[in-house]
Image 1 (spheres, rainbow, N blue to C red):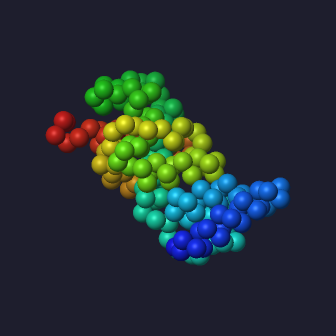
Image 2 (cartoon, one colour):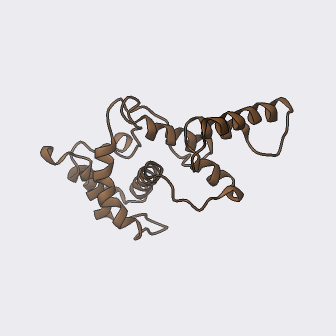
Image 3 (tube, rainbow, N blue to C red):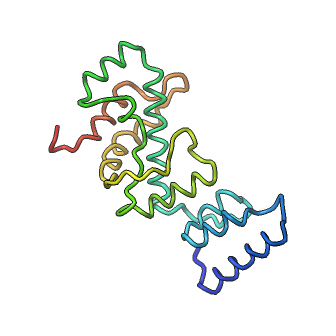
Length: 183
């Protein structure tokens, strides 16, 4: 869905009127304003299912959601490992630290602004609230997360509610974080 400049202006003016009238228990004018001004119109469909256009989510939304899901799953899986397996993982994954390796690093504000914008609106909507998702990594993360997702996504369907993904999938996903030329 795309709006013309005139349609955007009309929507933004209606948001102003909505707020000025103090209407409660209705649509969220702040979310609508942010969705319209940042071209994150998919978020309106997520928040208000009655506005669904049946369009697929944009690729950057899928990427951000997959990355955030992956980091949540990595942490969940690690937290459910035995202490022996946690020690083994630290030995098998170079430079592993739970605080760094299992925490979403953010997206680069200079080069991944669109991804940051998607994360910001997801945060505004209360999605993926187990980690800070609006951080600026200050370095590009797309290539790294694509390598990790290449390992993680095929394994996601093997999720077990009491342990997460398999130990091997966890280890291999974390190893994919390391650039191939540095392995």
